[in-house]
Amino acid sequence: MPARIMGIVNVTPDSFSDGGEFLDPDRAIEHGRRLAGEGADILDVGGESTRPGAEAVTAEEEIVRIAPVVEALARGDGPPISIDTSKAAVAESALGLGATTVNDVTALRGDPELAGICAQRRCDVVLMHMLGDPRTMQDNPVYDDVVEDIKAFLAERIEFAVAQGIEEERVWIDPGIGFGKTVEHNLELHRRLGELAALGRPISFGSSRKSFIGKLTGAEVGERLGGTIASNVIGYANGASMLRVHEVAPMRQALTVTDRIIDPRTHGSGD
Image (tube, rainbow, N blue to C red; front, top):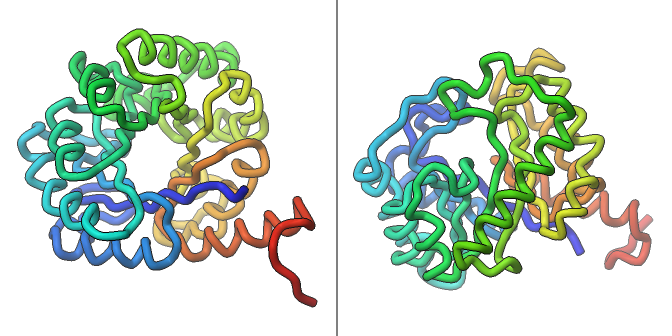
């Protein structure tokens, strides 16, 4: 079964990847619909940048940014909506408007009320690893063993989520590519991603346009599609079940070919 593709809809003025291109709600809605048309299985709407050094915004400002976008994209027969937030008030607003997933870069550490809301709403939850916070995460990140350390962290966060009433089958895990990791840490996570499968939860993987691709290739943010595809194909081959990307159509094409190579029984034929 091909990985699910999560299309990114940033409603922010300062995202590292698209620099406020979709801050206007109408443009963000149009962009989300385009990604849906390209085959996104889920749309991840975020109103606060988590790039290295990003400044925090209030829950009120975040809600103003995301509410019209979530409401519009959740209507009709489009793909389900994920809200990319660490704030309980933002999650509650988005879930009330039709979102079905909370994607939290702090793994329920950022707001003590968020876990309870997720449990009450019975939504899916993505728990991501991040060393420190967006302001500090790239300040000399150090691990004993990056994969083992992240595995232990995620195991503890799964246990916490379940203890708070979130059904275990609704939990996803994310190693947090680029969130408090050096280039070598990120590469090691790609190679050993399969070790996280021992936690028994599906893996979400987000490496799209990340800085490690630029450091390896010299490519600027908008020119990292090739590296993004390579990274995500490796992530998928090593166990990722959901890929969070900016460009959906090329990723869908890459996965179609990858599936055919890995499993000749995959539907499709040709010369």
